[in-house]
Image 1 (spheres, rainbow, N blue to C red):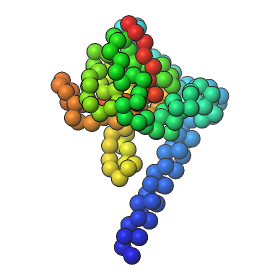
Image 2 (cartoon, helix red, strand yellow; image 1 turned 135 degrees about the horizontal axis):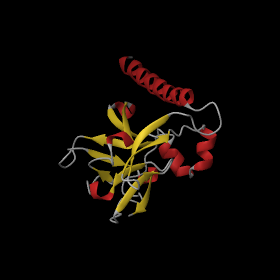
Image 3 (spheres, rainbow, N blue to C red; image 1 turned 120 degrees about the horizontal axis):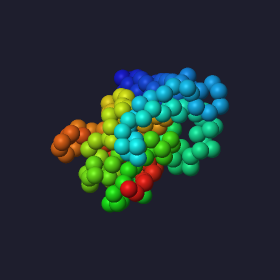
Image 4 (cartoon, helix red, strand yellow; image 1 turned 90 degrees about the vertical axis):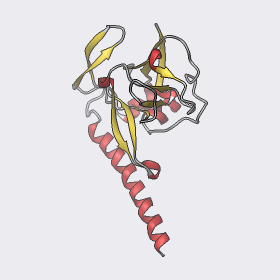
Length: 182
C-alpha cells in the first residue's frame, strides 16, 4: 500500500510540474503576434560588446513554424537528443554557437571541450547575461537547466564537474544550437 501511495505521489508531482511549466510559458507568451516589447542586454560576438535586443517570446504556433520538429522538441518541450548523436558534438571549427530559436550568441568554440558525456560541453557561456538557469526537478532529481536568455529556449543543463577556470560543464543539445564560423 505504501509503494502505491508513493508512486501516485510521484506521478502527481510530475504532472503538476509539466502543467506548471506550460502554464508559465503561456502566461509569459506575447498576446500580440510576434515579439514582446521587453528588451534585454546580451553580449554580441559580432559587435564585440553588449547590445540591447528584444526578448523573443512567440506563441507556440509561431515557434512550430520557425523551428524544425527536432528543434521544437528540444527548445520548446525541453527534450534531449540521444547521447553521441548531435551534429555539433565533434565540431572543432573556430566560431560561435548560437541559439537555434533566436540567434542569441551563447558559446564560443574556445570554451568547448570533450567531456565524454555525449553532448557538446562548454565551461562557460559567451557572457552570463546570454544564458539563464532554473531548477529542473524532472527525472526524480534536481538539476540546473540552462535556457537562452532571449527566447527562454531549453538548451541543456549545467553541472559542477567541469574543467578550470569555472569548474562548470554546460551540457548542451546540438539541436538547440547553430554554428557560425569566425
